[in-house]
Figure 1 (cartoon, rainbow, N blue to C red):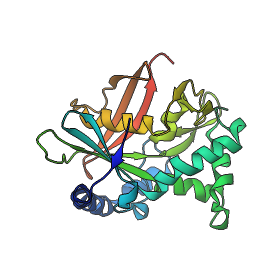
Figure 2 (cartoon, one colour):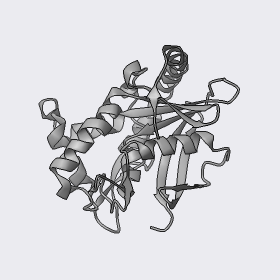
Figure 3 (cartoon, rainbow, N blue to C red):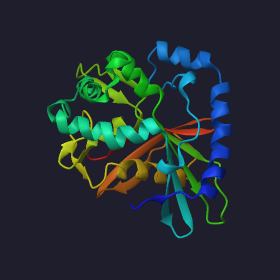
Amino acid sequence: MQANFITEKDYLEIKNILDNIVVKINRSENSNREFQRKNNTKYGHPDINYFAGMSNIKICRSLKIEENLIMYIVPSLSFHNFLNIFLPKAIEKYPNLFGTGNAKDVLYALYQVSEYDSIGDIERYTQFLIDTPCCYFLLRKKNGALSRKVFRLDLFRHVLLDKKTKLYEFVGGIMHSFRHCSWRGMKLSHGNGEIELNNIWDLPFFLGKTILLNTILDSETPINVIFCNKKWNIVYFYDDKTEIYYLKTAFHSNE
């Protein structure tokens, strides 16, 4: 998928929508998030204090996905740098720590290349990855109007112990779904990495497009789609308090 730089006009229009959404997020009850974080519920929200505003225009992109239908990709700087710099650096320097089935190995590799040690330890770095990096996806409809439907993609929501394998796994977000993917022959997360991506952004773009175009209102019903010649199931969560769509899981059905 070939993405283009965003125009200043589009940027300002999107900024107006996202600024209002971030205000809603910041005003929503922090007590609910605090409960979810303390109890390690499966799809907890990030900390209220870490929701960022609009990204720099230079890292925002537009992508034509159908005739007269455009998707906008608006990553935070930390999300942009994670996918473009730190994840590639980690898989190149520590390939043996990816695909082990243990998300803790991946986090160790990421921490080693992150230069975060001057700020805090690996636990604090993990919390930073949960709370801060995100990417917003929006759609300009065929009538020219910018849709109010917004999908937010996080890196992951939690790192939880799998009771069966006794190993840790990423839950929610792109690192959860990357367990199925490799890039340049290197696994992108803790899983088998059985699907080779041409570009590290291919899966985020695909998830954004699929969820924004989905018309099924029941968020518990998986969206069945084809990606990289595989049948995928995508499940999202809609937060009616903030009017944001989040990713629960994405996996191919013949795993």
